[in-house]
Image (cartoon, rainbow, N blue to C red; front, side, top):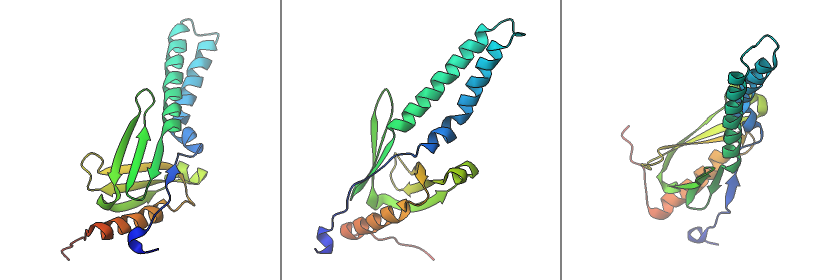
Length: 163
């Protein structure tokens, strides 16, 4: 197989289940605290706590559903981001436009063995994309870098630097 006919497999990434805890853990704790406060005997007006607890629970469930529906699809030429709950949206980044990468691991992500991969591109609508909730052992940067270099060579795109 020649380099001009090279085919890459399509890779679909979803946030790890621990990302639900990282993203929605605080909303869960606040809603539990509000419901516990509403159940306390010394509280005379319980309804505001119940309403606020219900609102926080709805916000938390929406956030969990959003994370569940989020997917990153890496094809041979594009990075496709599908997201949204009520309205589904797909954003496309041409891989030849990608210019830089970074990996970040916050303290909570380190505890769960996750990372956030940031991709910087020349795309006007998506100059920075964060792929969050990915297991540390998955080499997302290596996978995307290989495809970016292939697409830049195929399209004859070269970086000119002034050093």
